[in-house]
Image (cartoon, rainbow, N blue to C red; front, side, top):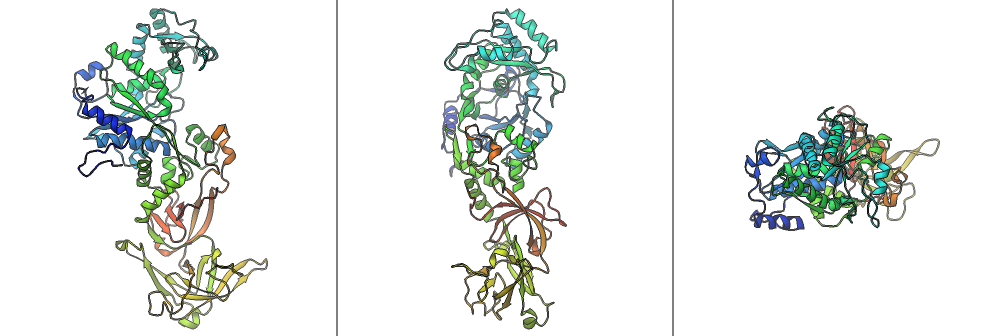
Amino acid sequence: MSHTSDDAKPVSNNFLRAIIERDLDAHLTDGRKFAGTPGDAAHHEAGQPDPAKIRTRFPPEPNGYLHIGHAKSICLNFGLARDYGGICHLRFDDTNPEKEEQEYVDAIKEMVAWLGWDWDVGGTSHLFYASNYFDFMYRAAEHLISQGLAYVDEQTPDEMRANRGDFTTPGKDSPFRSRTPEENLARFREMRDGQHADGAMVLRAKIDMASPNINMRDPALYRIRRATHHNTGDQWCIYPMYTFAHPIEDALERITHSICTLEFEDQRPFYDWLLNALADGGLLARPLPHQYEFGRMNLTYVVTSKRKLKQLVDEQHVTGWDDPRMPTLVGMRRRGYTPESVRHMVESTGVTKTNSWLDYSVLDGYLRADLEGKAARASAVLDPVKLKLTNWAELFGSLEHKEACHAPAHPHVPELGTRHFTLGPEVWIEREDFQEVAPKGYHRLFPGNKARLKYGYIIECTGCEKDEAGNITAVLATIVPDTKSGTPGADAVKVKGVITWVGAHEAIAAEVRLYDRLFTEEQPDAGGRDFLEVLNPGSKKVVTAYLEPSLAAVLADTKFQFERHGYFVADRVDHKADKPVFNKITGLRDNFSK
């Protein structure tokens, strides 16, 4: 996602770039010391000037798989660091052990790398975990308590909720708010030592229960949770809240520009309050990070709530997190989307201070643009019916004869070579390519009409065969002699219809999964609607198709344009040489029916 001009100087084309350029011009990021690893003020004071002009971070919580919305933040943070001589950290905000798993950690790392980004710079890894800072966070909490800036609250969750107030009513002080620092410190250590039940009490910041910003009404800092953590095991039974941990992580890692989405805008005052309180106490080094918010990119016809995505998986509405209908990056990769198309789409949407909606067809447009010059062509018949060429033996002397045909692997990329296949007395064609009674403007096969078998001969339809129920079982036609493509007589007969085909004698039977959008509504969960009510019953259709022989040995994850039908990929999980499986990525144009 490059934003550079001809002289390689970054172009300021959004407000975040303007902020970074302003800060660099004013030397606001100069003078920072970095000791090579995250640490407190004393740790960094012993270090050297930070070699990175800026530091950004992508900080996912490992409680699910990344989705298309995360791609925006990934490309933005890594791209800004690259363009301005900085470093981007991959950091796991793993402060909630009940929902986090190593599976998600591994999947997130894999998808960031798939998008083309690397957290190793100059042989040094910039992969971090919030849980590695739990000791410091605990020390920071005790510091706040000692300064009268935090207290242990033993109200029930319902009492805390009621006393918090709302946007028109100020909150009420907790009856435990007036405890002395000594009393709070003793109580907090009891929490740490497991002397109290889960949910019995929390540590809260002591700020202002009458603040117009509800997030400043003594937010919770620590809660009791007896849960095994994927990284720290059972070392802790108290865990920091995300809003407490996240600013500290940024400061310990010497992040300069903490970039997040708009829903965190109201949290910024607490972010600044906490970091200043800890820096004033000598625990964190200045200059401190600054938080900047940008608008989320929302795609139509998907949901991106991790909770809702997990529900789709758990209730088996989809086959897993990597189901090709899912908006997860792992699902999109399996569907056949390319990292280049995702990056290009993210770049095109820009960065603004407002949330935006983008129609899913825009992403498909970038995908087609990317695949157009890359994907080799192939012939495939997805809804097959047999076509019998009844004068084959008469013309060629034997039903065993096969006519050699060929076509470019890509019409505009000659270096991809040539596809070779043969025509025989029976071929598979699309069922829709024959009509007993043709509508006006129909140029394919109907009795008495001529059409060309693509890369082969012109044929004349003579009728069809049916079973006892009246279903068409075969189409009948005769070859028009001396009309083979590439020969002098190819243009002797003029036709308007061209028929895609695969020779029945060499066709490869394959499972083809035809995917469409998972939901029928643009915003499936709008207005609190149950998103399951608008699941698209036609989002997946599985057919047995016939493919040309050039696809006999393709590797999983290889992408093709099936002529006439669209772009397809050999499934990265299920495709095998003896049992080919292809997924439809997208059509040649957007034809989703709303």
